[in-house]
Length: 146
Image (cartoon, rainbow, N blue to C red; front, side, top):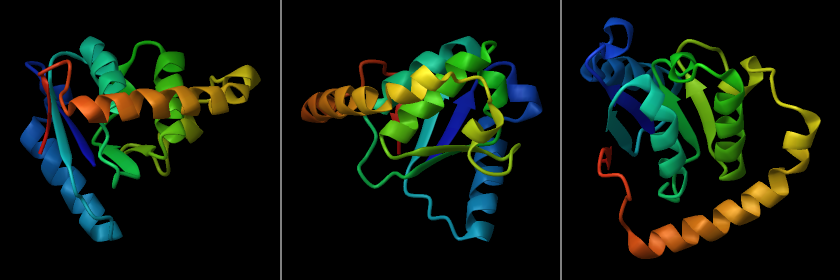
């Protein structure tokens, strides 16, 4: 799945179109199939909340989330690292073209107790994901999957 942010500040000069082109090219070169694209609108402060919403509406065939840049989505690295852990609990690795490997490997801010809670997080997210799948609708209409 590709994650694109369409915003007035254009993510350091990267429009959503350029983000998608770069991500598709990278995935194609690495043999990573792109089955879904998520495009959100808003500034970087809103991106974390929209990503949290996305956690409950992930299609079952998603195992990785790719963005041109993820590092800039959070002024607090711990919030971004926790979000990456939550995606991992859903079986999805969060990646960015700006880092080799999943970005959680580069955000060394999680505490041991965060990992101790991973099973609890996964069980709760599985329950909430199942409920969200029943509704088949996003609570925030600025998140679009195509």
